Amino acid sequence: MKPIRIPTKDVNCFKRVWRWFTVIRKWEITERYYYLHKGVQLVIPAGFIFDGASIPRVFWTILSPTGLLLIPGLFHDYGYRYNYLISLECYHGVSCEDKRWHEGAGKAFWDKLFREMGEEVNGVHFANWVAWAALGVGGWAAWFNKRKVPDPVPPLRDRGEEL
Image 1: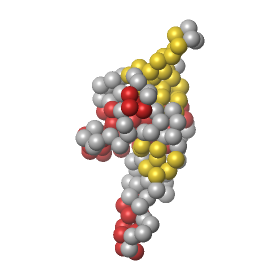
Image 2: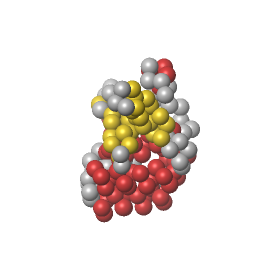
Image 3: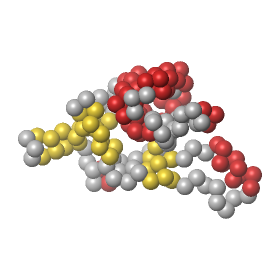
Image 4: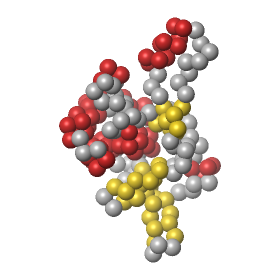
């Protein structure tokens, strides 16, 4: 995973400060990322760009978007963007292929998965439940907007990662 530069260089002081306070850092997955969730091998393909957990800046001192909730945020962002995740299914240990996992599952499913992954990854129950509740109330704009924005990552087939 690598950080994507926040565009503060070579702009005037006012724009630099404005961007510092308003632009959320994004991260790019540089190689396929694997996570085993309840016996299912989930995959995020290389090239996917996300912003961690979308926590308002005012709360960052309490809960960082790239801290406890980074990994759940990665899979949640992918689920919100595509409304499915990729699972790796292997047959007899010889061949493996990517499948779409829970395609069309909807917002509530991805929000619940976020909470469950948080429990698996960090075990901080209070933070996971508060973040899950916040998604239930305030996640609608992100849910509708994630799929409207053109995908900054080329389709899997264009990157040689055919589904």
